[in-house]
Length: 259
Ligand SMILES: NC(=O)c1ccc[n+]([C@@H]2O[C@H](COP(=O)([O-])OP(=O)(O)OC[C@H]3O[C@@H](n4cnc5c(N)ncnc54)[C@H](O)[C@@H]3O)[C@@H](O)[C@H]2O)c1
Image (cartoon, rainbow, N blue to C red):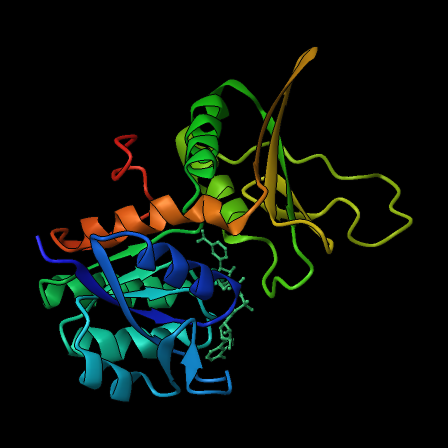
């Protein structure tokens, strides 16, 4: 099979990592970057465009890999789908309306997209195990820890984990507040009864702990991405899988045989 020609949207930390991983994989051919905000017309030895349309028309990729910003991804996706280009999206903080639009448009155009909040196999397994554990415990909290440059909170992984745990349990968890709160926000955010705490510190990459509590016991599940290379096998597998997939896939469970 010919190498899959890809364009990378976003030339930040993740986009550049994707370019390096793709260049090292003979089954994938990185062609160019799209980045509306970055200066300079070269990045990692590839041309860098500011406009999606100009890049897609010049290079005609089969797949776009997007690690950019939630404000940009919908515009990129519309330009891609209009040209028959499939999508692998890692950008987090995407609005639900955009996900619904992507589902509708990929189906209507017989195209495909993969949207995953976390491409690391360990994080995919953590979400899977948390979902399995959800029905055995009434209380759950998530602590997610990320580098200080992350723009959204909570992380997409934390949000998806909580949503899936509530779905698996069939009802919200029991959230415990604090009778007396002397500092605002110390009990974290809340989704379906799951308290979510977001830590932002230089030195971190992407980490998450799910804590479940019951009578006389707790269960802790933890995953750590200590480098961005942890995401690359999942990204490259999604690039290959999206070529023959249909419609929208949320997460990588199916890809890793966990569905
Ligand atoms: N799914 C995963 O496995 C995974 C892993 C890590 C990061 N992420 C997500 O990927 C995204 C990028 O992460 P990063 O660490 O590379 O960030 P980064 O800040 O290093 O890079 C973001 C890139 O997007 C571009 N950008 C930012 N705002 C934009 C806008 N409004 N319009 C157009 N372009 C814009 C920037 O120029 C930059 O090149 C984030 O949403 C992050 O949460 C996902």
